[in-house]
Length: 177
Image (cartoon, rainbow, N blue to C red):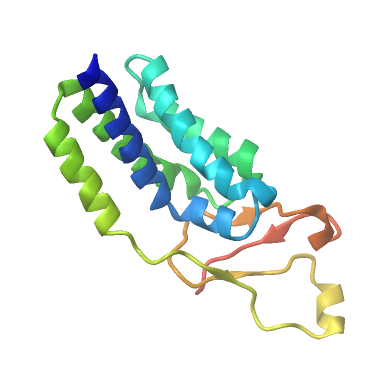
């Protein structure tokens, strides 16, 4: 029983390592897309994702991808229109499935090693910055306000921040070209 609890705790650490290296969550938390409790939501997601794996036998990759997409939509109010979320969720879900498989096989040393690699190879935090300001005339003609991502963040293209930011409540986030 103690070994099972230890392996479950180790898997939870793995989920935390994977989610903390996911730029989508970093950007959402850093920019308040989850509201004032964004960091708590990110921490909560770790527990929810690990519980999802334990409650569902033989998860398929598409199920994990859908679950992650749903969590991001519901908790961080994000909508990705450029089609990149499935690609990024694919990578995240593959890592999570790999970690869970190691846990189920009892390969705890390899699981620890993978977690250590993930935590040591963290990329710098992704940042979103507003572009140079437009004049009032240009701004009134523009329907969307673009934002550029300093780090590689292919997974966010459209995000709905608090409604006071724009008339219709949406802000476009585009990749740097």
